Length: 328
Image 1 (tube, one colour):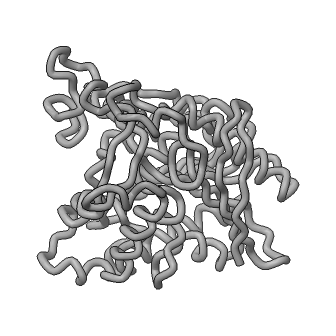
Image 2: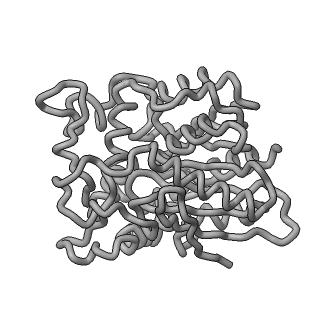
Image 3: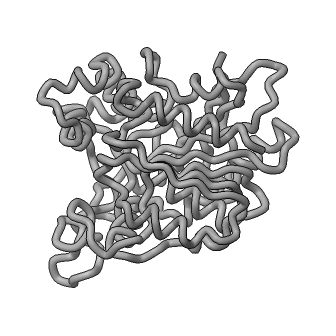
C-alpha cells in the first residue's frame, strides 16, 4: 500500500511525499528517506523489482516510511529557472533551501504519527541535507542515518574537488558556477557510470541484478516530464548540490555536527566514490552531543549498497540500519 501526497513549504513549494505504511500495530519510529543529488525518491528507494525498495524493507520490520522529493526533483515544485536555459541562473537548490522542504516533511510525519521526532535516512547529498537539518533542529529528529555522505573531512577529492570540472578555471578553490549552470542533464549512461566503475567485475550482473539497474534508470528518467525531449533521454537536476559538494570536497563543512542530539549511524561503503573515510571519521569526532554514535564501514560495498545484491553489501546494509533504528 502506498499513498502519494504533497506538503506545502513556508516559501510556497509543493513537496511530493510517498507514504508506505507499516502494519497497524507497528510501533517503530517513522523513517523519512532522502535522495541524493540526481535521482529522486522513487528511483532511489522504491523500485518495483526484487531488492529495489528500501522503503518496503523497512516497512517489513515495522517502520512507517516516507519518501520525499526535494524541490527541483521529481514530482516536487521546480524553481522557474529550471524551465530556462541553464546558463541564465546560478546553481539552483542549495542546501539551505532543502531545509525548508525537510521542515515541512518532518512536520507532516510528526503530525501523522503523533511523535515529535521521526528518523531521517539520507543517501550521499541527502545525508548532508539530513545532517544539516538535524544540526539546525536537534529537538526534532530521533535517529539519523548518514549514508555515504560528505562532511568536509579532507581538502582533496579526485572526482569532485580541486582540479576537476567543478573548480573555476579562473579562480582556484572556487566552484565553477558558470560551467555548472542552474541545472544539469543526466542520461541513463551517466547514472550508471560511477556504479559500473565501482564494481570490480567486468560482468556487472554478478554484482547487481540487471532488472534493478534498468528500473533505476527508467524511474530516474520518468521523474522528469521533459526527459524524452532530449536525445538520448535525460533528466534535469539542480546544480546547487554540486556546489555544496564542491565545498565539502575541498574541506569546508556546511554545518556543525556538534549540534546534533539524535542517535547517529554513520554508514559508509568501502568502495564509495562519493564520501571519503575522512568524512566519516571527522563527522564521528564532531558528534559529541549525539545520544549515541555508531560508525560502520561495509567491506567491498559500492555507493549503491542498498541496491546491490545481498552478498555485495545489501544484506549488511539492511542489518545495520534495522538494528540501529530498533533502539529508541
